[in-house]
Amino acid sequence: MNKIILIGVAVALGLAAVVASSALFIVRETDQVIVMQFGNPQRVIKDPGLNWKLPFIQNIVVYEKRVLGSDPPGEEVILADQKRVVVDTYTRWRISDPILFYQAVNIEMNAQQRLSDIIISALRRVLGNYTLIQLLSEQRTELMAQIRAQVDEEATALGIAVTDVRIRRADLPTQTSQAIYARIRSEREREAKEARAQGNELAQQIQARADREMTVIVAQAENRAQSIRGQGDAEAIRIYAESFGRDPAFFAFYRSMEAYRNALADNATTMVLSPDSDFFRYFGDMSGIDTRPPEVAGAR
Image 1 (tube, one colour):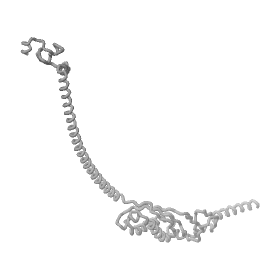
Image 2 (cartoon, one colour):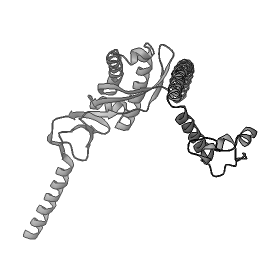
Image 3 (tube, helix red, strand yellow):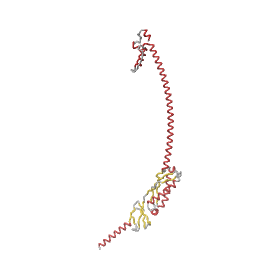
Image 4 (cartoon, one colour):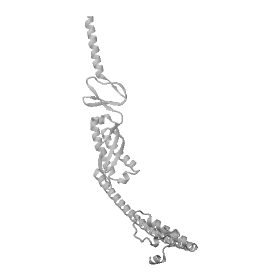
């Protein structure tokens, strides 16, 4: 009898454990829970802690209570000045109404897709009224506020509260960027050619001026050199004349020695002269006096 009672107690405890595991659940600080019964929401639990539900009849759907992020792909937008830009945005949102969220999109993946469509539509509506200059100016804060307000208004129907929408980047399309780069490069090459042409012209002017100044300086230097050379020659002639007047014999001897040195300095020099020529008169006598008979000297 006792054995049967023990078995019964064990079975009862097992059934109680199964029922308790099906009826009790824990809500974490970062979660919010919808208690469902036959596919219909019954209540929402947002406070953390231990909670209960009807076992085997009710189930729970868990959603994040924290702020979530959405990074839709870059979208090409036409601005008010007809310029095209590729806008890359990011959005921060949270599930504000779990029941409405469950009924509208059910899961976060669907919410991301729906939210991306809403963001792209809002971007096109708002940015279509502004130019590229305004997009890149201080008005960008106002643009973001308008986009966030429109996205939040449409996302409310999904049980979503949008906390922030930001433009991360706004780039020109690749083809437009290449065209602008080509135009800028062409403009810089044209400016470089003009600068080089102006530089070459200035260099030619400087070279011509330098050549002209050099010609003038050289001519003046040559003129001065000739003047100094003429003065030197005149002074040399005066000195020679004065020296000749003082001692004609020594002067004749000195001039003959210079002639010997200049004429006989090169061993390869060949001279054809008569031995009794005046050129060799100092070879016979240091005084240079012709000691030959008059008839021989006169025949020379």
